[in-house]
Figure (cartoon, rainbow, N blue to C red):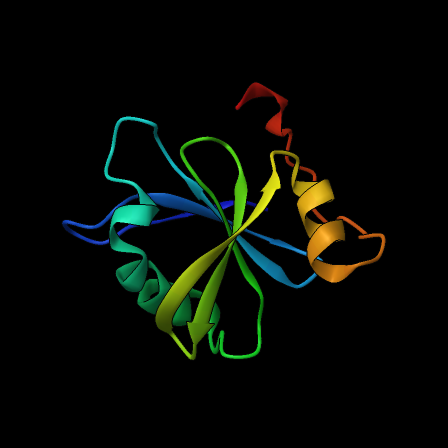
Length: 110
């Protein structure tokens, strides 16, 4: 299930949990993106889903490629590109194995 999160002055984004990976999508293409304030997004994730220190966080960027959001606790430390535009392929590359998807989200319309 995809959920919207936002705070005043911060980007609006969707969060989906796929195979225990937190996946962030920008809510609208014309708003402030999660990339511009990823530090605030990570803090918001901690509030929304709890401790993220041991969880993988992935973000779909403006080019629709999935990047790993590197972090220590809820502190942003960098992006690592996967060079994948299909979530399943990105997760397989990241995890090195087949991924069971728990999401019923249709991303074809995005």
